[in-house]
Image (cartoon, rainbow, N blue to C red; front, top):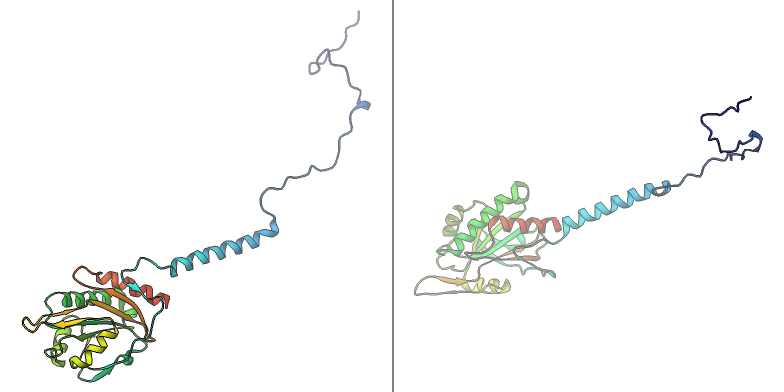
Length: 236
């Protein structure tokens, strides 16, 4: 009696397949599915990304931040004038071309707003740092010229910053100058006090009025004024 040979890896009910009847196997390589961007586009994508980052950086640098003063969008050139300075020499506003001028109208006998503003201006100059401060000149024009002599201005301003310059003249000389900057002042003869507009006007190196910073006992701090001026310097 003969026994059929059973292979362990072939089911008993599976018909045997002849080697000659096997299905031919294709020898063509399998087509690869591409994923990701085309290699030719990679360099351009890098350039585009770099350009986008540059635009974002420039936008952050030049974008208007929350200013504490009022930025003049269509600035006009300030009218030139000549007054006697605390250095003992007559000076013109145009003598300070090439610098930013922080112009303030006040008086040495002022009990509150003027010393507060001048102290803030001194803090502003310090906050700007030596390099930027070299391009800034603080000027105070007296609205009480009868009492604010050259010597009085010099002694008073020295308490705040030796670089500050005072300017004085007659009421008839100062009144039109103040009006051209939107400054009102009126002296009360009975008390000696002078009502006046508290504001710092920033004039750029070309002589254009660029920024008005309202001042008072609750006005922007020296650091905030420095931030405004720094923004203006960067913007040019």
